[in-house]
Length: 410
Image (cartoon, rainbow, N blue to C red; front, side):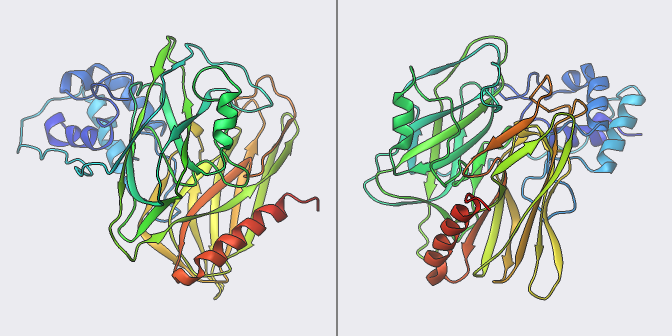
């Protein structure tokens, strides 16, 4: 029979405590036996339904770092423990302390220019998009290009902030939009022209830190602003965002810049009550190393998938998200970068459920869903580096031409 000391404490600490802790994003703590036992029935229900802990990628895709989902064996242990009265058991060996991912002092510390009050209640929708998001301009003040290997996002409102994505802006577009609204930030996606928010990754609930493998970096051109798109969930009271980003640079001369390739659908038209199955497909012009993914879609999308067909005809699932939920979005890094040769065919698939049976559909009452965006209404951002550094420039040019060609009338 499973006990707290024998099995359950280890599972809770590994999968729950990072969020359900003092000053964490979870609404209550799950650090002690008493705290967990008091919510044992609730915990059993949410793990049985796969609602908690939040982890979107399914097992069919490539192995991803920081997997928070429970195995079936762990779920069965929790169910049995709760059903048998949540026994305490006998203390065993002292558990190892959880080690922080990195203790390195940040090379760069960025902060919002002024606090912004998160409204107590969510708004309606405007233009059939989710209202509860806002983009903030954070000046970098860099007189030279920066090579960022990792960063940590620090928020003073952890229960409110969900997915946060980033983009380096050299055009001044963010400042222009910011100046049009009162207070810091603006209610628009953090995209700039053909470049999507998330071009330099993103963080989410339970994953506020993102560190790339050695040999890869995000590039922030000189004289950039950081655009920070924050998706929040109102808590019933006004809370203030005045958040920070701590970043680390790489010192490896041979480090390669990550580029964002978009598998995406730029225009969507789905009648009320219907479900659409949409696909996008294209071929890699050069060999790349795939390091990670960032999903982008609202809750009207119920699932997404990305497959690769290699030049030899072998087909592999790169990413499978069987139950998509935008509130748990983040950048997912692979356990090991995946080499994709030139000539690989990438196919992205999305299921758009404009129905009442879709529990995450933000558009109620139902109506025809029509939306378009230069960087994709639906998308999977692929973070890749050219295997041959001499092909990086041609990869960037090809990406730009492909994005523009998608937006021309067929």
